Image (tube, rainbow, N blue to C red; front, side, top):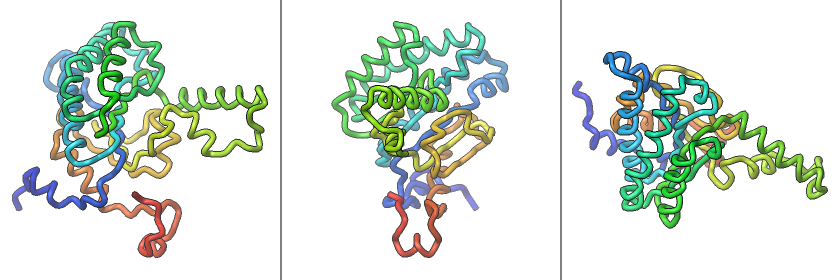
Length: 259
């Protein structure tokens, strides 16, 4: 049976069940380069093309939030030459792509310890944030110098500070209290988490937020993750029954909290 083309695949999607928020662990740039006897930097550069196309199709499909794990806290431990290359690539890409993001009504948000990034990279990033601040379409969250343990630790410090100041009683701390002190405050939890590259782990990414996310692992390396592969993930997502702790009968009766 011949494989469906992209248009046909998109046509099979239930537009009422498009995930509101997709998060992606973009893995496999280095292996993609190594398999082709190229420098790792070439893999990262090729990965930028995947970012561009997935951002574009997410916007076209009406996805409201796309969160990309671009650089983790642990990535600072990579060889300095690779870190420098990644920093340059991140800054250059944002500056280059910002006009198209504005044109496509995409708004940039930054999550993570961005103060650790080189000043010139911060400048490029915040130029993009400011230039897209008026956009009302897809919200593109870039996780840079981010880890979930850092984020949760930071939230705990902020909340403990409020307790110390007498602004909140420990007994009043709820899940909502923690959620409201995370980097993702105001952003709905991911409906779907995709990891490319064949690994099946979360790698310190959005640990609080993905409590009820659907997980999708694919062997496709990030530079090869094209629109067809992305739509395959969305099709798979739409086969899932999201129960949020309830029974199938309750979900069938319309009592689930899915969007």
